[in-house]
Image 1 (cartoon, one colour):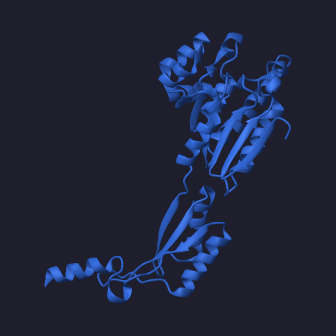
Image 2 (tube, one colour; image 1 turned 90 degrees about the horizontal axis):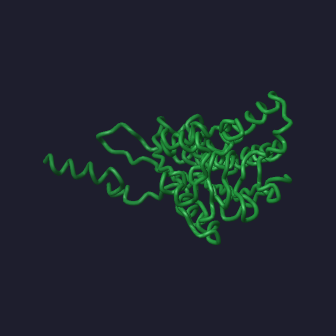
Image 3 (cartoon, rainbow, N blue to C red; image 1 turned 60 degrees about the horizontal axis):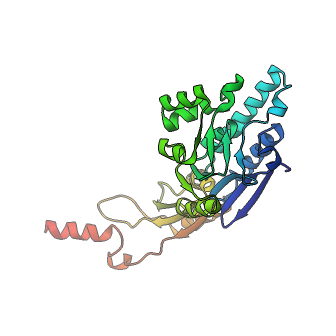
Amino acid sequence: MNCVTLEVFDQIATVTINRPKALNALNTQTLTELRECFAGLEERKDVRVVILTGAGGKAFVAGADISEMVDATPAEGRAMALLAMETFNKLENMPQVTIAAVNGYALGGGCEISMSCDIRIAADNAVFGQPECGLGIIPGFGGTQRLARLIGKGRAKELIFTCDRIDAQEAYRIGLANQVVPAGELMDACRNYADKTGRRLTFEYSLVGGVNDTKEDAEELIGLAAPLGSHVNLIPVNPIKERDFVQSNHAAIAAFQKRLEKGGVNVTIRREMGRDIDGACGQLRRRHMEEQSE
């Protein structure tokens, strides 16, 4: 990739739009590379957070590349808009937490792609806006929908109709930015936020013999846990007299664990303690109820 760079460290992926001489403006090549990058990242189980930023200190993304659009036919313009919408939708629907590290100008398509992220952390030199309406172009990359959802219809209409640009503090005040930090601290702030929001999700899965310990159950669990990079803790159910549930046998538990691991899921099996003296989970409650009824 020439226009986009990707670095992965400690389960955090940093995607950088690397066209600083063009203020990281989005052209067809950049949008295509971003789409391919996001498609690859959404399949990676070693990435829990994605940070999107722009190269250089002047711009996050200054908008769509007007030099490419000025001579485009209506069909070519529509194709570019569809490509951008596909790319932004992919970013918006990624299983990982996504953070826009907004450094400098986030105008037009730059504001729109930042709104496709879950979180927007802005440097104190950030500038947001949808100035393309001044050129007779609507925010056609999904901005008319996402902006209204984030800041309300009234403020969204005002920004779009007036083509006004707002600074980072105003963006924070109206809800377009989640946080504002000094420009030199932007990436550290994003990584700190990633540490808070990107914690591994754990599923506590109670295994019940003949109920949810089959091959099909394992495949369903893989489909849920694997895309999230989640951990699964298997809990063999403890038998109690007031329920018909029985514990899966050792072979079934081992087979279930192996199938999950083969599907790319990290698995542990909860250690049993106290079952032989009716002191395990669920069994103490049953004993208490029996004693109360005597």
